[in-house]
Amino acid sequence: MEYIDIDTWDRKDYFNMYWGTDFPYINTGANLDITRLLAFCKKRDLPFYLSMVFSAHHVASQITNFKYRIKDGRPILNDKIHASFTYLPKGRDLFINVTPEFSDEIMGFLKNAREMIAKQGTDLGLNSARGRYDIIGYSAIPWIQYTHFIRSIAKMGVDSNPKITWGKYFKQDDLVLMPFSVQVHHGLMDGLHVGRYFEMLQRYIDDLS
Image (cartoon, rainbow, N blue to C red):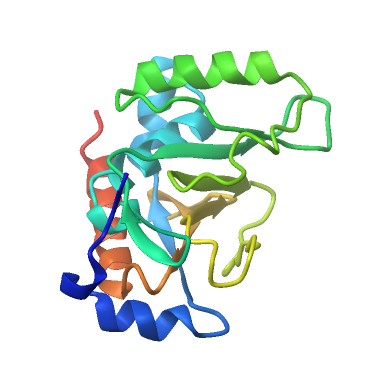
């Protein structure tokens, strides 16, 4: 992690402008084509949810703006970011928060995630991500084919961790689509970067075999 020299940062003016707004966040939702990811998981007997977390985070890690955060009112750049995701244990109504060490290789990530889930048991994991500036929060609402979704904010304007969510997938013609939303701090990135993320994630999924 390193502090960014804001005086030479090309986002200086935008950072200062959005830092003082009431709701400095972009929240964008679109349908993601997950046809190839479902086939990939089925072929290898992999859990779709955790595989989706990996895919989403693998791509986010390749975009510099998704590594920006705000700490003590100053922009920082993380050298590595981790996935913190919600998980609903079987037979329970309360989800847990899981924040494993991220491995940028799907089988390594699944191993770390499964071990952390087993280790936590019914521990909600609320402290695992509290106060951290190096995570992206992932969650799913697989019961709802929603059209828009906004995540909670720890402290308005100060909370700068991106939040990514998806809903119930559905068939359309020969494709399987899924509502997918990305919530980010506008002081750290723009619609261009969110759009680039959607394009890169779709390309990554389409290239799976």
